[in-house]
Length: 128
Image 1 (cartoon, rainbow, N blue to C red):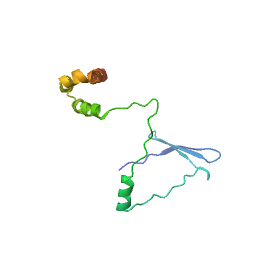
Image 2 (cartoon, rainbow, N blue to C red):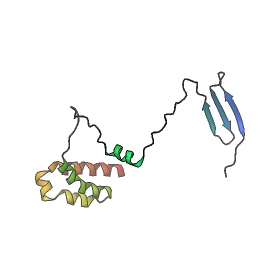
Image 3 (tube, rainbow, N blue to C red):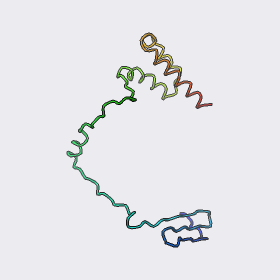
């Protein structure tokens, strides 16, 4: 159970919009009164039945077309990186490097190895 501390100072603004209270244990509490224009209006939550919610989840979101600065990735790269990322997330750096150095990746996707080396350098820099 928390022990309540004694009040030392109570300060209020002339317009009664701010109230500050200082306590003996060093805690300072500041409260602000909201005007009628500042009060938050709560929007009632929409309640769905299970079937309606299932329909809402199945609706496909509108995807914006790619813009000039966007980067597109192919699904095959994601598949290759997933094995390496799995090893990196479990801190098995040597296993990730072995996976990246397979003949297929070395010959066809050298950028994967470069990316892995950059990640390893960044991980080592964080540990130091």
